[in-house]
Amino acid sequence: MELYSKIYIAGHKGLVGSAILRALQSKGYHNLVLRTSAELDLRNRGEVLHLFEQEKIDYVFLAAAKVGGIAANNDYPADFIRDNLFIQSNVIDSAYQFNVKKLLFLGSTCIYPKFAPQPLREDYLLTGELEPTNEPYAIAKIAGIKMCQSYNRQFGSKFISVMPTNMYGPHDNFDLKTSHVLPALIRKFHEAKENNASSVEIWGSGTPRREFLHSDDLAEACLFLMNHYDDNEIINVGVGHDISIKELAELVQSVVGFTGEIVFNHSIPDGTPRKLVDVTKIHNLGWKAQISLEEGLRSVYEAFQKEYLIKQ
Image (cartoon, rainbow, N blue to C red; front, side, top):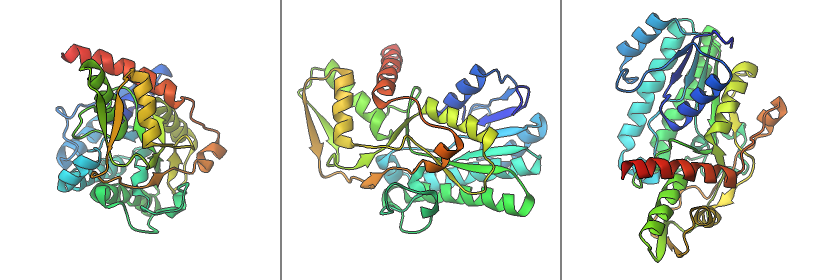
C-alpha cells in the first residue's frame, strides 16, 4: 500500500476496525474511506456496489461483522449467519467487480473444529465438528474464507483471509448479554467493586483455556499482512500462549482492584475447552505480538472507566 492509496475500512467503528484505522493514521495513510452503519448498510448489495463505484477503492480491510459471545450466538443464530453472509458477500464481490487491488478478510479462530488438536494449525479447517454454541457465525466466516479463495482461483483476485484469536481492546462491547468473556469480566468486576459486592459470578467452570490478542497488535498484523502476504491459504494471528478463564478472572480482579470472592456458575456451558492458535506461519514471515495481557488489560480498564463514567 502506498500512503496515497485509497483504503476502505469496513467496520471502522468496531473493536478491530477502529484499531486498524489508528494504525493506518499513525503510519501516514490519509486517503481513507469510512462509512458508519447509519451511512451505509453493508447488508444491502445496492448500497455497497454504489460505494465501490463511487470511491474507486484500492485496498479493503473487511472488519465489519455481527459479533457476540456465547449468549448472543445462542439467542440470535439466524441474525449471526444471515447478517455476516450478506456483509461478506456484498463487500467481497464488490471488491472484485470494481478491481480492488487487495482485500483482507477478517475471520475468527471459532472456524476450527471444537476438538481439533492444539495449537490450532491453519490446515485443521473443516476437519471436524464445529462448536455448537457459535456454529452459525463460524459457518458464515468459513463461507467468507471460501469465497475469497474461490475468487482468487477463478478471477486472479488478491483476497487474503486472516484468523485472529480472541480479541480485546479499547472500544470493545461491554454489554453483559452480548459481549465476549474478557470485556464482560472487566465490567462485572468494576461494578462489583463500585457496589461493594461480596462476590462476582463467572459463567462456566473456569477451566477452558483461551488466548487473548490486543486489537492494536492485530491491527499491526493486518497492515503487515496486507503488505507482505499473498497466499491463498488462511493465516492465524495470535500470541501463541493461553490462560484459563479462572486465571483470567483472577488477573482482571487484580487489575480492577476487587477484593471479594469469585464464584463459578457450572450451569452455564463452557464452550470449546481450549482454543490456542499455531502462529508459526506468521512468525516465520517476521511478525510477533508485542502487548502483554496484563499491560493490555490495564490500558483497556482505563479506557473503560473513562467511557463508563461518561455514561453515568
